[in-house]
Image 1 (cartoon, rainbow, N blue to C red):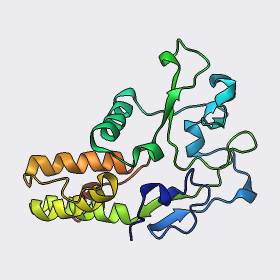
Image 2 (image 1 turned 45 degrees about the vertical axis):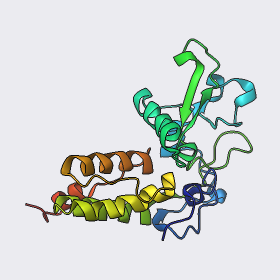
Image 3 (image 1 turned 180 degrees about the horizontal axis):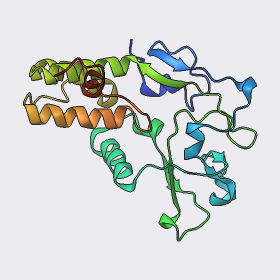
Length: 212
């Protein structure tokens, strides 16, 4: 079932997300394995890219940063927080003028706060589990299924389950038209699962030959 608060799924930076009631399937990572590489660390900046006073406080230090939220997606998340009170944004987005080079993107660095792992002793150790499937995804896939069956009002019921935790509003989505529900699905997949490779229901059905 849902955790009451989105951040509780990842337990802060995620290093202790071993027993979330929302998680269905995850890849276990252990502190004892001392993993310093992997997908999540691709979002982490090398130390020289970060002003000294912000290294691991709050910007996690890695070896080399390969992946980054786009500026347009960052703007969407910030707008969702400002306009709708989206409680997921602080977990999904680290953001600020922490860069050592003020001429590079005005010194702004962005990264996903979830899944970061332990950075108390230097470079990030990937001891946060990677959460592949959780109850929130099951709810989103049900909303998508209702959409493809043309049952738009029922789709809104499931979308508003997601919206209630995110915006504290269980009637956030009210327009039960094809275009409005599709836009809501796209928005909530973006905001609920950023930096994750989440399969949509349509893609899954097509891959398994269950949808003509």
